[in-house]
Image 1 (spheres, rainbow, N blue to C red):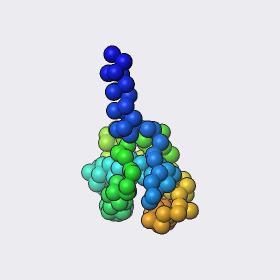
Image 2: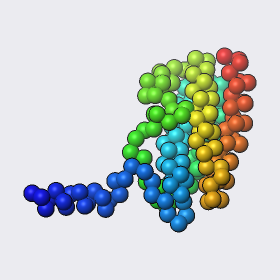
Image 3: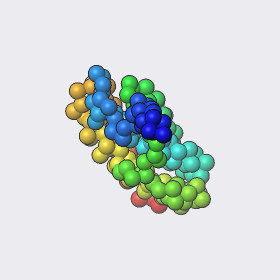
Image 4: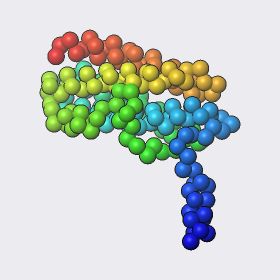
Length: 170
């Protein structure tokens, strides 16, 4: 029985069950943590945008949703390819700006102007959370990480400004 227990423990250790990312020659632990948290964060923004493409009637919101998907889907692929990034085992609802399952369902259940207002409110908070996350790695020694973080901040600050103006009409 002891041998079986030792084998199981050894297998778990070897399989990389650590809860914190392990730095490697290319990426620091902070870089990997950023990617592992930003991937599900971006995935939720893409999901919200998919819902918008179905439930919105606003040309501006529809264009914004398409732009968000076009920007964030490739960033998900980019971060997923980084050496040492492990797929997230949680949905990330505790990360800054993440919507709860209930809020996502509320988006799915609404349409028209009501949807547009909920979408804009949620996406503003979502983007603000992403900016906070990205600010933690803008000084990364890995140029790809630092450049991606800067690009996320720049794009999402512009989108927040646009959404704050647009929401005034709802």
